Length: 316
Image 1: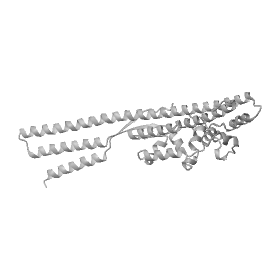
Image 2: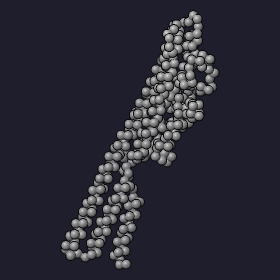
Image 3: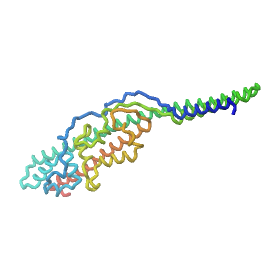
Image 4: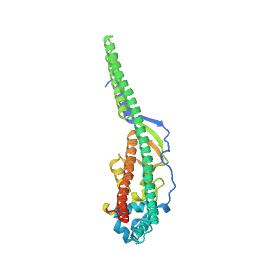
């Protein structure tokens, strides 16, 4: 083979190797605000005692089912319910004390509703930020792809124009071959760049609620005790599996290579567009799981209303 062809083959190998090894990464430094989550300094002493460790009165078992008792224990109103049921069964009932106890229960229910609303809003805030960043990176990626595509088109046009001009001028075949191969290599190189193009953003999230949920702790730094108890309560209808465990299973099953993406649970790291979308999805699942707590609260309130009607002699 002629030396000139060895030169062209070597040039081809260099272009292909560089194209395969090089990955276009754009690092974009963006401040990631922490205004969404606040550390509320909860401790294990704030957590309700597990329902299985409580000695339930016959009144509680009679008037409330397991679902209501679980949510009542999460809200910390078991003693108040016992008092309420005790007043209900007295012949000379003290209506004032009954009303005061009922108001105390209602206040705790309202407080729990506010906690659910507050934490779901905070999670939604984090989710929206992740989605906004993913859209921003996607735009940057599309812009880079367009620029490389235009470069490939211009390269092809220049190669065609150059070879045509040389042929018209009676140029040698080697020059035409060299231009054609070089132009082709340039197009291949640009094509490989497009395939490997990737945007990344460095995010610091020291207040990482995903890590808080993943860790098996007796309390949460960000979730109120009622919500943390609710997520970690072992439900016999789910074979003792907690809602938190089910959530972690979904994260593992539906998130892309989550086992290799420990950055989701760290305090900072580099995120691609797909990783940001995964993070937003994980936050959305957590938000939805906590929001379902309202269904159990509603179920409890319905049973409590039946008890109040019974006390007041109102037919159910």
